[in-house]
Length: 167
Image (cartoon, rainbow, N blue to C red; front, side):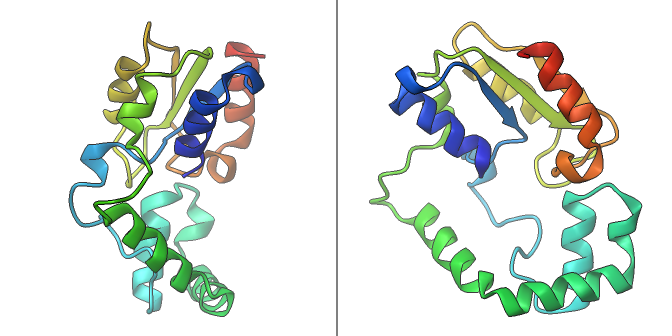
């Protein structure tokens, strides 16, 4: 949700933002129009394993042992209740939140769009939707070794892309 929040902040407080980096951002109408592709509040190791395979490309996250550890941490965090409230908010007809598509149309700060080619949550083709929604477009970097969480999959390439494009 960070990209959606960053774009919204940049539109609402343009005097406080010099540049924006959007990394596989959530919030597009098309991504919120149906059921999520995975259970974001997994209750079993198998569900956690599927979630991890969807959002992380790094092989270490694809073992049953890691899924069990991640599920235990998730269960003890209380995050499931927060996620439930969050998704109810997205579905609410009277929500003050605007879809990312609408926010991007007002974005004026120089923006970089970064996408993981292996993102199982938001397909890489959505990068063009985001770029085209920004007035004047934006540079786009596709990271072939990353899924949704670039900072886990390939932090060096993510940092390099940001430094090169908006330094």
